[in-house]
Every structure is written in structure tokens, then in C-alpha cells.
Length: 330
View 1: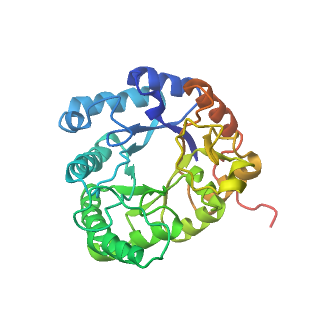
View 2 (view 1 turned 30 degrees about the horizontal axis):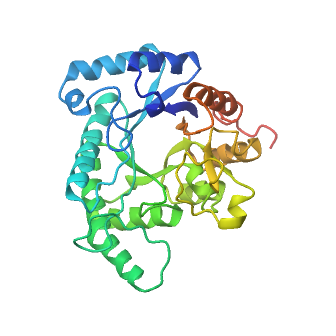
């Protein structure tokens, strides 16, 4: 297992500086943002896709600093009911799928997306309960008419380019917890007609599960047993001991309202200690995950650099780097 970073936090800095900082802090991998919500701060993906020399330059830069490209991040909503937004995010995703193998990775990280509640809607509609029954009609439309056909088509694109898509389970999108990720993967893969191992799976980010009341360790087991544990983000969440019990954890107040929110993103170790992170890493190992823990720093209490360094120091004591031993005692 390797330690890496989702490098969107370094937006505004040249890629050369970013990879140097990663290497100096002992990282072994980097995840590059290439469009949609994370933006494309380091290069124009469509131009790199069309230019072999640009591809070679990026690969050489990473290799010279001892870094593996762990994945391309293109978190977006390609099924947005506003067709203009959907096209921008879809095009960014397609470019990422085509570019990933040329830069040396087979992982593209995104969201499942969330359509409108019915044809003609202009904004996404995230359903969180089954009643009134209008919500069941909304879910049927979203899944049967939009999500499953869209991702069945993208599965074929992924197969063509030898890429796996890792959906980040995130509230606000239709695949937001293990059961919805598994359902969407199974239904889309079946609709695609592709046999064998699934190529639509999960990016497990514990920070989005904590405040839903989900145990990320059990989620890792569930996704691993389903064969969908493709990628892992390392981000933490602090549940406020007063505001949460008062008002619950469905909280739409802005991330800047740190003193009023029921929960806040924290750098790894400042939300949960090693009593969570070490068993979590152990479960990843038990499920056969031996790729990258990709640090995603979105802690509004800390600067970019301090939050990044704190996460690196903390996770170096939790990550399992070497292959397991044969039980010599048995």
C-alpha cells in the first residue's frame, strides 16, 4: 500500500512544484485533477491527450520524483438535468478515460451523478426518503431512465481503454453509500452486457460516511466482498458533540460556518485517531486492497500546507507498506 495525495489542494502552483513537495514529504503517488468540479489546474487534459510529448513530459516528471500516478480525478455530474453542465462534465470524464492509460493509470475517480426528479427539471434532485410516494417515482426515473443507461454506456468506453471508474460515495449524488454503489455497478454492468470483473466500482472516502452514520470499516468489507474496492481517499470528519445531537447530521450550512455545523471535514487524525485509521487500513488489506491511500485535505481550520503535512505524518504510522508475511507460527 502506498501513500499519495489528491493534488487539487495545490491548485495555483505549477505541477513541477507540486511533485517536488510530494516527494519531499515522502509520498509515493499523486492523483491529478483533470476537470469538472476539481478543475484542471496543472494542464489542459484535451491538449495533453492529443500530444504524445506532453504525456511523456508528465510521466517523466512523476518518475523523476519517484511518484506513481494513482488516478485521474474528474468528479462531476455527467447526468445533470441542465444539458450544458452535463455535457461539460461528460466530456471531461470521457477525456479522462482516454487520457488515463496514456499517463500510466487505469483509475478514473468521479461521482455517479444525480439527475433531475423528472424530465424537464433544471436542477438535480437527491432523494433521501421513500415517502411521499412521489420520491419513489423520482428514483425510478433517475435510475431506470438516466443513471443505468448512462453508466452502461460508459462501462463500454472504459473497457475499450482498459480503465476502471471509481465512484466516490457522496451525499447529493445517487450513489452515496455502499448499497447504492453496489446496486448501480451491478445494474449498469448487466445492462452493458460486459462479462467478468466489474469495471464500475467505488472510491471509498470515509469522510462522507462518518456523518451518514456509516462505519467505513464495514463499508470497506462490504465493497471489498463485492469486488468494487477500486480506490480510497484519506479524509477525516469531526462530528460536533453538541450540534449533531441537537439537530442531526444532515447539514446544508456552508463549510465556512465552522462553529455552527453538525460536522466538519478534518485532516486525517484530527477527526478520528488511530483507533479508527489502523483497523480501517487493516480491513483494506484483508479485502485485497493494495493500491493508494490518497490524502484529500479539505480542513477549513488549517492551511493547505499544514493540513497536508499533518495528514502525511499521521498516516505514515497507519499505512501498511510491505507485503504480508506467511504465518510462520502455524
